Image (cartoon, rainbow, N blue to C red; front, side, top):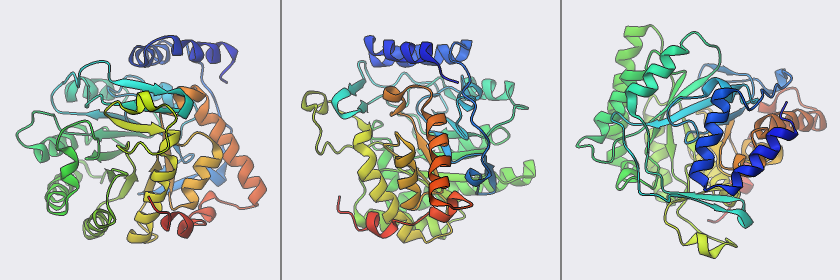
Length: 363
């Protein structure tokens, strides 16, 4: 259980610049300074998505554990699954510092990191070392900024981590790598999915199992862009979508000074937009394709609202900056309490309950 010491340590990180604080939090998890936060198993929260049995629907989004340093420590915080990365074939330093900014009044974060990571080899070595460990660990793959063939970079990620990943996330939605979001355009997306899923099919034959592939999209797409992505998702053997990444929008922020910083906005200010886009996507793809809802999840109520808008699972990251390392466990316990109140036997029964409300929300 997360105690007073961990809470004090979390608040102390606010005395440091955000990127230093992030590094120290990873170090604390690595050395065991952050204690485990067990949650009571609740069968009503178990979800089978893309053939994977998730013990609860709350996962850690990519961006925190970029280099696969602490996936097992993350799982011990109460998360049902953890996603490492984004990892690119070659190491890269990312954009110039400073590149992370807290918007404390808004409980938000702006980052322009730019896929800073140690590359495939470093992450592969760490994941190989935990090969026999239990728990669901997804691998979020991306392309190097200077890549001459970005599609090939994604294919390389599938091939490199196929024997280690529980699932893959193809991240084409970060706003911090110039031109990356262009891969969301229909023709480009078709070429990418053709190549990635062909590589998955080949690796599935080699390994004797098919690893699910999810596509992570941006919250800043037009209605026409959502139409195109939904069409390609349906026409390919894709296992699901992750909605969404950070936003370039700055609507309604109190901290206008920090709002001027370039980069993607996440945390509480993203909740409304990301949830609306999620519902719009659910309406387009129908009830069967799995969707993971991301953006602004800071409470059990937020998580349940994502599910009511069409999500099968949810992920969080930025809200931990403000709520601390016990957030996942708090949300899982809160979801159990909400299911008690709703008197349902599975959280799945609540999915899509507010789909129309959110899908009709204007952005």
